[in-house]
Picture 1 (spheres, rainbow, N blue to C red):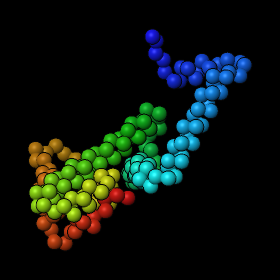
Picture 2: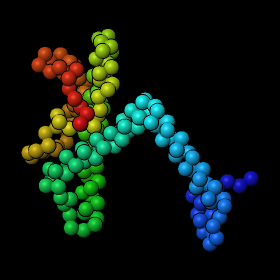
Picture 3: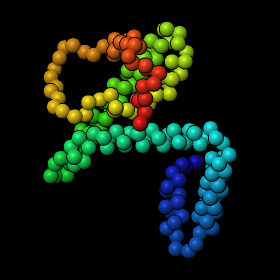
Picture 4: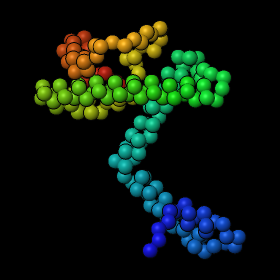
Length: 175
């Protein structure tokens, strides 16, 4: 028995000049599935939360990319398509690096909160989003140099939890 993809079937059915009853049936079937999904979405509060959460994650990433782009006056630097693409990819890599740092920091905070047995703090940390930039200095001049000394993310997390002036419970990493 042969296999094929949905797109191939639809493409072939759509290529017929006469109205095709199989294509009409598939279109109606799709409408039924979409109607069932919409009814579930309307009725199920948890499903709506999950959908909104997923949409918010994508939107947060775009907001971070926009914040990075604002640094250069909302302009992609470069005159050729290749240079514009390089600049775009550079901004994307920078955003991913920021998310990676936040993820590592949140993981270390969660580990230490578990070690302390603070279940309430663990639950609050789990709700935080790694797509945040309020704690990054986006202005000024930065010098990047090769250094043998690496950031000890566990030490940073420990200092955050021990510092009396910082209340980790109210740090909002999601915006």
